[in-house]
Image (cartoon, rainbow, N blue to C red):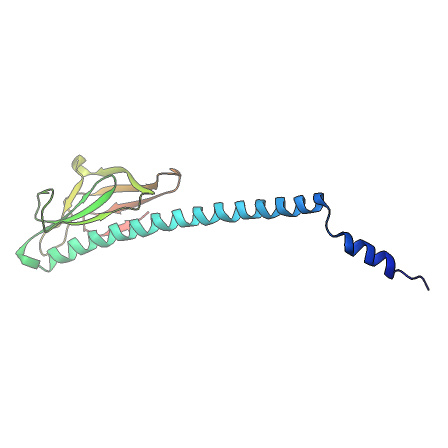
Length: 162
């Protein structure tokens, strides 16, 4: 029988070589970089989805308030590059106390507003809830402009994600 206990003790006592340590640290750093990149990509996509969903919620709220004749008034929505504004009446007045402003995450912007008549606003009709403007609004990430979501505004006042 061969006594290997002295050779095993000798290799264990030496520990890791500098090259082995550098390789392990390098692999750990590569894995960390990949996971951080993935995390931020997912986080950006979630910001886009959240902002689009909130914009749709404001459009639906404006339509519902108009159909329900809240304050015996019409309600409208204005799309801007970095925000969506719900306002009372057919004419937008900046700074009005009745405006509900939703500012997008700093990562999100509206790339294009293609509503009929070249407008940024849509107003809903009493009783029917029909929209004064139809078309599309394209949201995108500022850091990755190929990551985008488009909403479609129909004449019925309904909104859909494309």
